[in-house]
Image (cartoon, one colour):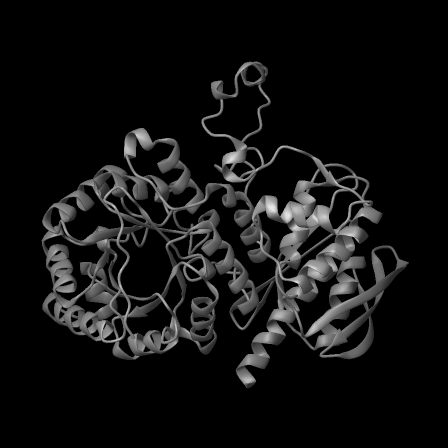
Length: 513
């Protein structure tokens, strides 16, 4: 398998998205194969240059996902992470075998604390490992990226030796990650600048974590110093406090092109729809005051601000909502709208959907119109995302339920479900209507997971707004997220619980297979 590495003008920043790998490492952010493919398609359509689709050696599911993403995307390079271990690299190579534009991303620790306590290797031994494993990765594909894990706590003298070893062995991209979110922008910029000066022909990459809230600032400091690849995630999701948010990096480079002098290949009008889809898929809601994609990002309550905006939007807005895909109209379609109107909306948002999914979406849209007087763009966008790909859960389905109050705080719930194509009715008691429903679902599916998080948010405005419920269940130290929307809050909550249980059952079935 061979491939050519990404080449770009000196002012072009490569966007490397790791939502499907590092982002999914957030507890509760686990996605199914179909959900990952849906996210990958959105990233590809947005113009992401490299999609890190998983860690092939970590599981059979990750390896299959990497292969599937590689075959589904049309433009992006698809990447697998691999430790500096030959079996990991071989697993990555196998997963990328039929991928048109493959990349192997291999890494090893370089900091003194990691070498002493985690790897228990000398500096010279690690240099030998770098040389051997990068060369081995090059036997599978030409595009090899190497990362110095915990680079920002590594002395510059040894870090330079490690980079030289990787470059001499054939790595074309060198990542200098702030693995534990330790760096300060000024020192990170100086570090990247020194390495760029030493290795002017190498594409340096930055991968920053947000433990001190500096992931975006550090990433941009790296770009200013000459790094030409940024590793980031949608909405900044990721391990611990998260990663640098793609939307903030891209819009900072676009809005302050005068300062950075760099461009990206991202279609920024796709940012908001993609952000919403990832948020609803993972159950990691975007905080209201989140930069770029938060619901308050373009809201102005202060009288002084409102006065300025009415006179000239540039007085208090440095970018327009439309530039990131947020449209301003409220009521978009109604119960008398036909299929052509819905298809026109899909074209406007540049969202692709196969005919089967479109028909399901249209039927769901008509049903929503019967329950909701005004269907907003936010309602429609969430509905489209729900039907953009084949239904995510196939093992279980909630057909209906009813609850009765037995006494003060005591309820009985009877649910009707489809479990692997078989109808089942179960009744259970609980401390409230939802508790009773959840208990019945567990009894029907023989699931014994622990409920760790339960959130309900309003999708849009008004008393008839859709409720978006997110349930996180924990079983065997793994977290599973379910989400659903409905104008009925209890129905949304029940369906979200079923969604999480469905993921647990799907995981169990995959292990048996």
